[in-house]
Amino acid sequence: MGMGVSSSSRRRGGKRGRRAAMSEINVTPLVDVMLVLLIIFMVTVTLPAVGVPVELPESRAAPVEEMPDQITISIDAAGTIYIEDNPLAPGTLPDALAALDRGGEQPLIVLRGDRSLDYGRVMQVMGELGRAGFTSISLVTDGSVTPP
Image 1 (tube, helix red, strand yellow):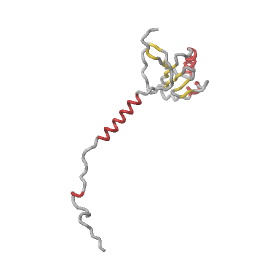
Image 2 (cartoon, rainbow, N blue to C red):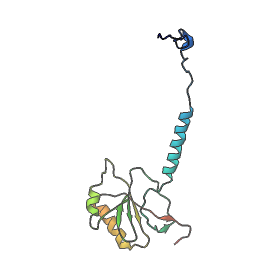
Image 3 (cartoon, rainbow, N blue to C red):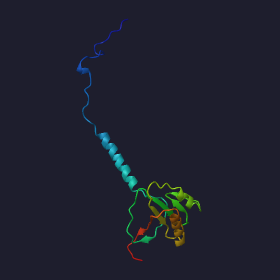
């Protein structure tokens, strides 16, 4: 019982048996990746910077430009203080401010206070900020068209 090798199963010699190298660039995957990145960018840009629900007071002041190295401090209607989205236990604001990484320059502090808060509560937080060495503080408000 001998096995024979058929001529069709033998490897052909020469250039006819090899595949020619593809000299084109397929841009379809590149376009797909760019569209996905565009969608991700569009979704993340529209997300709010801080997730602490605060009902801001109204003002006709000019809006402040957001900076990448700013630190947002929020005070909700119950008086709880948040640094970014992290709530602080009562009495721990000075320690939390001392632990902030300041880098080389003084960061901009953005203070968001609920409209139902007592003025004294907001001033207590501003006093602690000044005591910790933060001198650039912006107060955030909602826009208004009516003068006070």
